[in-house]
Image (cartoon, rainbow, N blue to C red; front, side):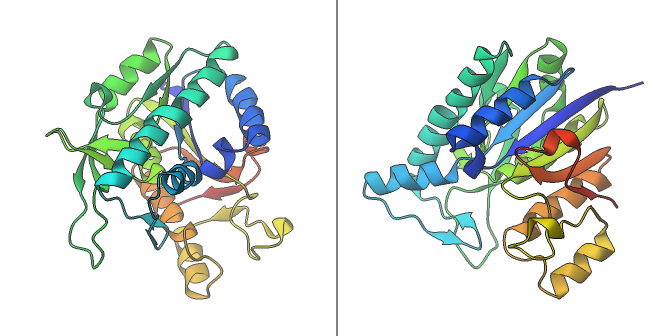
Length: 257
């Protein structure tokens, strides 16, 4: 019987807010068994870039990352945000270890090509070294992963955190019974964006396509759900989209094939 593994992906709006971050760290620290956390930090990166006089360009929710912006996101994601989370977890007695995809060569990517937009130094994942991550987990280490990868030739790449979470879950699904939780500021997928009570508790691919067609699901929720379905289809046992203060109760939108 495979051990259970919880992978929590937490968005920038959560980790950049004192109250929600503290609550999340407490609930994540209370989990038993192997755990792994993937985080964002986009708002902090945008703020730091502005302070440095750099303009942030977003296309369909994706950050265009030129050489200057890559320096900013490396500092923010791999440094400030990652180490703040690691320090908070350490204060709760959790043996956390901050990682980018370049550390231990755990995630390799290639620079995104073939799109109408030149996203710059943005990476699409090629492989995740599940064996090395499993070694850390088996040693009792709790990896805290920043949304940065590398191409194997010395180049760092800005990489979507939702995608990293899904790819890590897929890589570990043969070794663990994985529960992947996407944690953000809403109760889950909503029928009406301004109504938390309109939560959709379960969603399969057919329902997703219908909701996308009628506009209920749009914007950044579309790639998030695509990552969810890819994870389930690759053998991840459970996938949940939930709110930062209720993910540990199981309330949210459960994703099914």
